[in-house]
Image 1: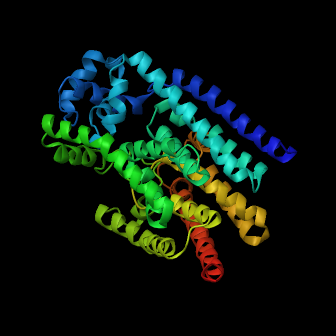
Image 2 (image 1 turned 90 degrees about the vertical axis):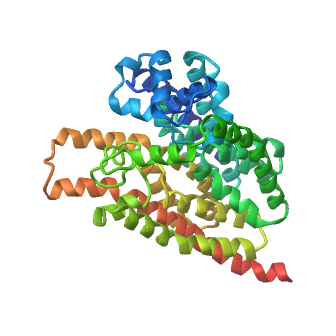
Image 3 (image 1 turned 135 degrees about the vertical axis):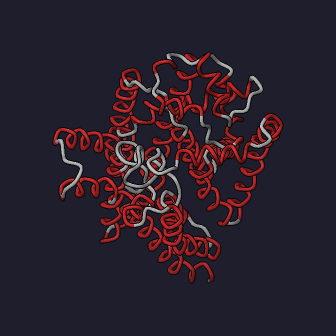
Length: 437
């Protein structure tokens, strides 16, 4: 192993150590520890007792009788736990955990979250290390050191993103392919809005990649179909109930409302989508949702056309995945923990950096900014500082603070997506003649 690769690995190990120590310590100290895992666990327990997991009162009954210290929960945390917002396919993954008592179940989930994220980070580093091992190690180590919220809340994004990264590694290295197929299928079953466009790349790219994508789809159907059929039996109105649960969190001032009055869109674990910016000017769901889609649609369509028309190579694949990873976070609901998917942009950044020139420097600057702005510790420090200022609710300084929270992250993510899309288009145009020859 060269000295550069060893130094890059040290950065990765340092980030892993910070993640493990801080994550475990904060999960035990945090009053609402593993709250997002409860969202998965108790509805699955309800389903095991043949209840309707999409009905708040049925899940609440299970939670109150079996929930550990549920009497201490706030009204908000009880609503979060009892309003199930995942598709039925997620039960194919969560029901085995719900068969266990809470203690072993949440410790196993936490271990899988931490272990899978560290494994995925190492695999992403091996992909970028061939070009720039130190840069890759520093960026990925920073991601790991700033992933404490995943350990504290136990959100499924930790496992979903990790399995998606593992699948990409398996497909591009052509190793442990069956493992990669299962990993991406599980990601799609639990959080399709995180892994869906990564799967779409392999489908559009053609050749062996398309075969892998179709195999993933088949495994996803095998995993998810029994859950959908069973849910349709015990909860025939689950679609309407799911829509009602989602709408309850998206009401003005709700947890998932992107507007300034939201109780959960800003602050630590903030929303990242473009709606947070647009709602500052037009606080109307029909307007900010439509504009967000219209902004991202041209870039998505260009990406689709490039992917269909070009023959995949390793360099183009990394640029294609990096661009769609950043863009996918913007038009629809995503939070800070979903941005760990930016691990998939590091190999493209390392490649451009190793090639030198202005584009490589810009890629490194934007990637670093994106990882900092989606990291947990920088925002925790900033919010701690802001709270000490005791700012008034109105005034120029207060509006400036709100702007710092709302504007930078989506704009940087959009810039990352555009940069890699431009590099992807340029690479497709320059490589096309040689392939035709």
